[in-house]
Each structure stands twice: as C-alpha cells, then as structure tokens.
Length: 454
Ligand code: HAM
Image 1 (spheres, rainbow, N blue to C red):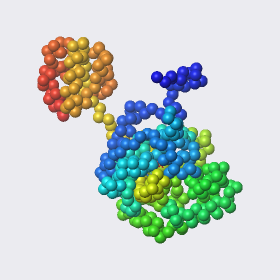
Image 2: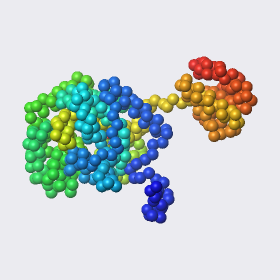
Image 3: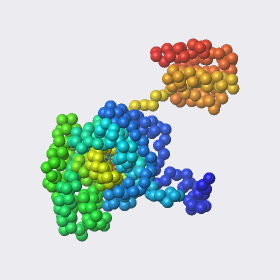
Image 4: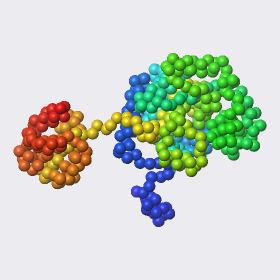
C-alpha cells in the first residue's frame, strides 16, 4: 500500500488536504443531475446523426500529443500532465480527445471499416491552465469526429450537430466563428507573410509571442495579451493566400451553413490553440457579458477587465495531416468538442432548466426488523415496475421517516409496521390529507399505480 502523505510530510495542514486540488472540483448530486441531462440531450442529437460511441484511456504515450499538437502551443509547452511510469515510460493525461481518436483509428485498422468512421466521446480532459471562470484543470468534453472523409459536407455536419445540441439545451445567443487555415502548401506562403508583418513589430509583442515568431507565427494570432491583440488587427489574412482548392472547400462549407441556417461570423484571425488543424477551423462563442452575475462583475472589476469576454462553448476543425504525424498514413478528419463545464455553468446563470431528475412520488416507511427485511423485497418489486421509490432504511422511527417523506414532497407514504408485515399488508397514507388505507401486499403495486395515475 502506498503511504498517504500526512500533513507532517507534505507540509500541508489537514484542512488543506481535504480540499480538491487547484483547478478541480467535486460535482455534487444536484449539479450531477444537470450534467446527466445535458449529456443525455447532446448524445440524443449526436446518435441521431449517426455517430457511434468510443472510449479511450485517460492517459496515452506522451509522444502522440507532443508529435501532433505542436511544440509552440500552450498545451504542449505548459499544460500537459506528464509523468514517468515505474518502467520509465512517459505518459500524459489526455489534454484533448482528437489525437486519441486518430490513434485508435490507426491502431484498430478502422480504415477497413465503412468510411467515414463517425465517433463520439464524453469524458474528462486535463490541462494545467490558470484556473478562472469556465476554465478548469480537469474538465468535461463531449466530442464528435468524422474520420476518413475530406469533404466540406463533413465540416458542415460537425458544426450543424454541435449547434443543434446547444439549441436543444435551450441556448440561443451563440455565434459560430469560422476561418480557413489552408493546406500545407498555401499556409507556407501565409506563414512567410505573417513572419514579415510581425517581425516589423517584434518589439511590441509579448515575451511569449517573440518566441512564437520564430517557431510558429500563426500562434501569435491566438494570443490574448492586449498588446498582441492590437498588433494582430492589421495582420494579413489567410483567405488572401488560400489556394483555389482551399478557397473552394471553405466556400462550400459556408454554403452548407447558409443552407442549414447556421449563423456564422468570418473570423480571419481564428487559428485555434492546437497545431493539427488544416482548412476549416471554428469556435462556437457566447458573449459572456450577457450572462454575468453581480458577483462575477465584481470579480471582473477587481481584475480591471473592461471588455466583455467571449466564452468558447465549443471548438473544432479539420485535421487532414494529423494521421501523418502519428503514422505513415494520410487520413483526413474533422471534428469538434463541446465544453461541458461551461455549458452547465451557463445554463445555471441563464436559469435554463434542462429537465428534472425523476423524483420519487412514494416513500417506503418500515418499522421493526421484520418489516425492514420485507421492505427490501418490496422495493425490488417497485424497481422492476420502474416506479421510483424513496426510503430511509437506516431510520427506525415513524416520525423521522415521515419528516423525510414530507421534505421530499412525495404524494404517498407506504407504511410497513410490524403488524402489517405479519399480515402481509401495507398502510398507504396520502401525504396531502393524511387519509390511510390498508392494502394487501399482492395488490399493492396495482393500487399504487392507479393512485399515481390520478
Ligand atoms: P478545444 O477548443 O481545446 O478543442 O476544447 C473544446 C472546448 O472544450 C472549448 O471550446 C471549451 O468549451 C472546453 N474547454 C477547453 N479547455 C477547457 C478548460 N480548461 N476548462 C473548461 N473547459 C475547457 C479541443 O479540445 C479539440 N480536441 C476539439 C476538436 C475535436 N477538434 C477536432 N475535433
């Protein structure tokens, strides 16, 4: 058994030890119900469009991320949770889901499956980021990928399905920001042009962007530091350098979106934070300003943030060269992922109810050992009939059990006392008017079903 760090050996107080690590949190039952509803709704749309579920490990060989996400990206440079195994291997907690999907596609020879392969996943991802509103070190994503198709229609389907999922959750005020990054040929010319542009302004760039200028000038477009955002405004735009094939592809994506009535905004400086993208990239943005609570406004004031921050609810794009970074094969792909933490938070702020947990309408009260034993098999009959039933088996007194039933707001209490247990009967008590009736157990289910129908 590994030794648990005690307060003495870690230097932390006991109070500090019983806290979740920075950037992580517990999701308690009431919020978990919202998460489950959100996941259910997203899954329903995604499954309808033909995506199939897949689950990959929470950690992978470090090389697959470092080889594909880009060494000048924040994710690879600063945010990966990387550790050595006892055998000396380097593993990394997955910072995102697309690379593992492509790894799985290659590993399982999905090329021989009917193409394209449409997959979805839902789970935790890990990035060592500075925690702030809507940004965590462990966060949930619902992702979809279409692997094995290079057509514009697949890009449009991804965006369409993600926006439909957001609409089904009751969200409205979001915009799809979209851009093209071209392919490896035409992007080369753009890179050169960007390099020249930023070189002239190098003294005004932030420290990180000075390094980015040497490694990958496109990354400067992704910097949110005030000084770099200002310089970016006059930078050349990719669309001016895109080759005719890339332009045609982008035009086709936009035509599909027009046809599907998906509102979009051409964001010529959108590059995304990961390097595996080519051609279409997009982000689904929500203007955070519209949702700020008084508390958040206060926090922002203290941080001297004047401009309304836009919140990315989802992001994605095409990744036609990703497979080449992992293998000798060239397999096109496109996809996107919704950030679940931000969605749940937003639903809460906007007071949108995604549906309630199916709350029990009856409560089973048991009094005495024999009744307790009997009530366990009784409960099983209700479960098999799919009727939710609440209970508190650890309590013994009728007063405390009735109190809980009252708090839960059930319609009926089923009281199984010692006498009733011997007689194989149950008292059904209406929680509204206190009227009680004794019902033989063999007739109980039907009796309760009828009562609940009324
Ligand atoms: P991403 O933009 O890094 O893309 O993440 C997608 C979404 O996950 C973001 O829009 C955001 O809502 C949420 N998210 C990201 N980081 C955090 C965080 N630290 N805390 C809370 N939420 C976060 C990807 O990960 C790509 N793999 C998406 C993709 C799929 N591209 C192609 N296929």
